[in-house]
Amino acid sequence: IEVDVVTMDIHMPKLNGFDATRRIMETKPLPIIIVSNTWEQSNVEKTFRSVEAGAVAFVGKPAGPGLLHSEEEAADLLRMIKAMAGVQVVKRMHKTEPKNEPLHNGLAKRVSVVVIGASTGGPNVIKDILEALPHFNVPILIVLHISCGFAEGLAHWLNESTALEVKLAEQGEQLRANCCYIAPENYHMKINDQHRIVLSSEAPRNYIRPAVSCLFSSVGKVYKNSLAAVLLTGMGVDGAAELKALRDAGALTIIQDE
Image 1 (cartoon, rainbow, N blue to C red):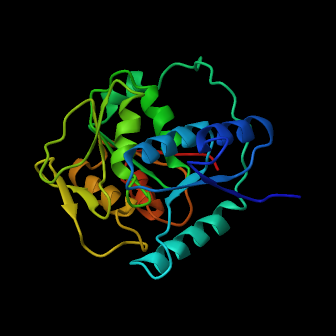
Image 2: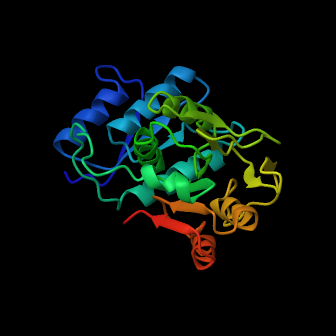
């Protein structure tokens, strides 16, 4: 039987979701979606371990029929399954240390802030980037399209793999060097003229909140061309037009190859 996509629970009778994901990705790679209860912290932690093993996405487990938000959550799961069915994946082997000269050696001298936008598949790529930054003398702001209930677990997981401080952004917080700020769930993240974080519950952009486009537009007004903007994995258009505007204004821009 040819399989297009796998939905993986965390708890199973003989093999847990992390070990099952790892074995599949080391032998016959397939797009794997972790379906997890977000109300249990241990499940969230195991979800990110499974992502590290090669899972392409994760969603909260839908509530039972007739319960609050059950239809909406079930529809989100179906959309994720359809989207991930066509994703190309490769075997996950043990990582080796990169041999190239780290980018951060010169980057921090050129910019005052780094902003990163990512969507499906983004957590692992962001983890790889932060792991390569033992110290980085500018703040990093991240907007990631993520299912509700996972943002705090994401910050905790990333904190374990980098010397930088990783935290959920707070309203009015002053930006600090060597700190990585993640947009909290359901809030746009912006920067004001005093280089403080502004969290906004204004309408979604590109049907998404938090939106990468809001962050990119905001930092462009404050930092002009003294910034680096990075657009990583995902689908859709969120952040693309704003990234081009930043590039046209002279900012350093980086995109991940498809």
